[in-house]
Image (tube, rainbow, N blue to C red; front, side):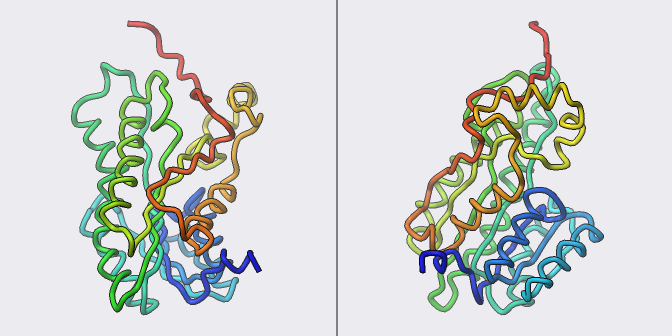
Amino acid sequence: MILDRFRLDGRAAIVTGAGRGIGAATAVALAEAGADVLVAARSEDQLRTIAAQIEATGRRAAVVAADLTDLDAAAALPRAAVEAFGRLDVVVNNVGGTIPNAFLDTTVDYLAEAFEFNVGIAHAVTRAAVPLMTADGGQGAVVNISSVMGRITGRGYLAYGTAKAAFAHYTRLAAVDLAPRVRVNAIAAGSVATSALEFVIGDEGVRRQMEDKTPLGRIGDPEEIAAAVLFLASPAGGFVTGRVLEVDGGTDQPTLDLGLPDL
């Protein structure tokens, strides 16, 4: 059965930023496909809720409440997964994001922080995970959550878009470094209905503007990103590495105009 290729029975995964949104949907999707899942984020309450959903599928959950901007805490996640589940097969690097800012308000420090938050944490987790995934002849899969803004342009997205573009190319380079034992892919997500967009999509006019700028005429759902993650993480995506899968509704322009004026 072709659907068997999407199963992750007996495997173990890490999902960062798993308290809500794309990370939460992904953690539950991986569990529904048969994986035990370690979920990591700042909010323990949110993680406990997701852990309960994972356990409701019959799989095991491990909760690590941590600020992953502490790179030592980020790098400790793979060992925690092995201690909880006895193995590690999948890493989903979902932590990321940067608040938009005008060019002249984007300091060098702000740009560096965007890079560390969107790329540095993922590297810390992945670097620590690779020896554990490949121990005893094992293989692994890494899925990075990037953004359409790493490919397109728009005012105010300098730090975020630059960091996400770097994350996409990091994916391509890491895939070559780690082949053939570990596959590394990314998803360039478009506008998705998560808490990060609540402050804008709650406004009917703004939401309509975003939908009008998306060829498919709507905002994405976190489970649609989770489904793409499952494909890339599972045997279904076993011949895919070093690729950035665009799950963006056909977007070729920013869906949210920040209204920044000319200089």
